Amino acid sequence: MPIRNLKDGSDLPWISDIRPNGRDGKRIRKRFATKGEAIAYESFILRKVDDKPWLGEKTDLRNLSELIKLWYDLHGQQLAQPKSRLRKLELTCFGLGDPVASKLTINDFAHYRQMRLDGEIEDFQGKKTKVKPNTINHEHAYLNAVFTELKRLGEWTLPNPLEGLPQFKIEDTELAYLYPEEIPIVLDECRNAEYEHLVTIVMVCLATGCRWSEAENLKGSQIAHNRITFVKTKGKKNRTVPIAQELANMLPRVRGPLFRPCRRSFERAIKRTGLIFPEGQMTHILRHTFASHFMMNGGNILVLKQILGHADIKDTMRYAHFAPDHLDDAITKNPISSIL
Image 1 (tube, rainbow, N blue to C red):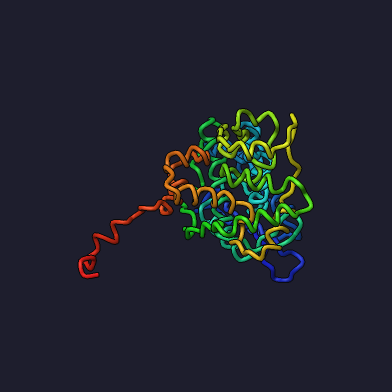
Image 2 (cartoon, rainbow, N blue to C red):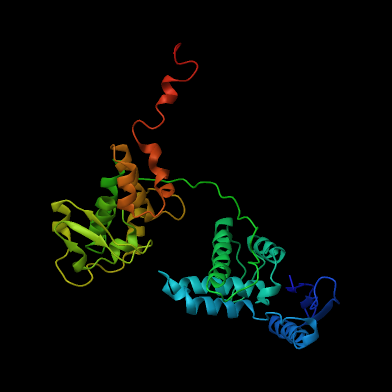
């Protein structure tokens, strides 16, 4: 990486290591007390090279942070959660040392992601935390999207520096769901919770397959004729799901927000049940429960795709194995079926 921390205990741990005139040009190495000084020095050296017209076309000397800001202004702020995406990109940029974007290479990012996995990269507060490969894949995808979109907009003419670098392969995670006998246990604890509408939110999730945030943020205007219309969804498309009259009667009769944030209350209720869910699926297990039971009860996979609001059928196919007759041919068409 052009700028890195040698961690050798010296007063000048940060080193700038660059070849401003390319791989065959002179190598310039200099040590500094802080990362900021190293970044400033590298920018100074590269600008000196850029000011020499006989070297040909001017080099794009924009730092990665400048491109991220440009991407955000032209495209990123239109995303569903723009501030969150920007924050993650800024953290990645900080970890990479905010290099000159045209100098960023696959090798730089490969070293960065390994250091992230090992917990050697500091965040904005100077804290080092090990992350999982899935987190790295998200950072990879987000940064790749910056270059791809800027290239589409004509704001970036050089090759995408991450092109050709594959993401980590991630094993499929367990899609846990509630068994029929567990659902009443969960609902009973939610009824006994400190928030009276907690059980209603849980029942909306179980009855429609919506995400927790979609149920928690419901407004009265989204309820009509025993149907719930979910808006501002992850896929940025509204979808409407019918509900039973009994559930419709449980919903508060107000025009504005129906509920208050109560995720913590749900977590405490689940803790009281003694049930153990896979990591990261505390509230999402309700969505998995709807989809799993929908297929086990003979539901159509294409209908499920519409209800869940998936943009890609591959996401919905994760639940296909719950269908009653899924792969039943394995029983009758295996080589020992005739002797069993």
